[in-house]
Image (cartoon, rainbow, N blue to C red; front, side):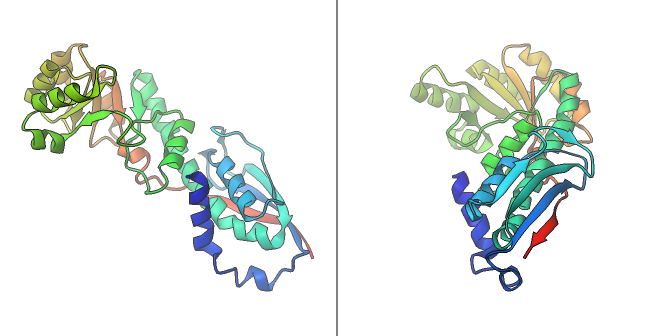
Length: 276
């Protein structure tokens, strides 16, 4: 899967060649370059950048100077890369694209998880990731210190509003699942009001997700659940109000914003030496 994504990234960038590089450099020209952080960031994706260069040309040498998950300041040299100029320059943009996005997500996860940790709340992502990039996005979330929710629909049971509407009630949906999957998987139910909280609790839900509930209602739901199920909050949570939700004392907060709209971090590849 990862190799296929790297292959696609390379193919879309120079599958038909590099009209500039191919007409400036010869096969004997070599180059050295540095990856430089242009922002403060949590470093992430160096392993993917290396895999990109190795895919483009196995003779390229890529050395990370900073560890995955390390917080660095603007101007920090992150990595050194050297090899044939023809292929090194072709691998530049795909490698940077992966690393910039992943470092952006890791940094966001790091900063928001610092808030959640103060209140002993588990911060998790969602499936709102860039299509095809979920493994990379979720790896970046973990690198930043937060946790992953489901990787895919096969990972765990999560009964959402459309499932409930199709079955007719939370109780019917939970009973149907229980009759077919056995006793080991946990069952999560998404609810939108206190009446549904009570029904999910009575039906035997292991995890109750409070979807788009105002804080005052979350506090009432927490009192109603009273430790009988894990409480997850989702919907409408962002970096500006995360702390307010954490103060409610729920167990888990899931945030699509960890992956779906994170600004990439600025990283440059600067050539330090060319030998023709």
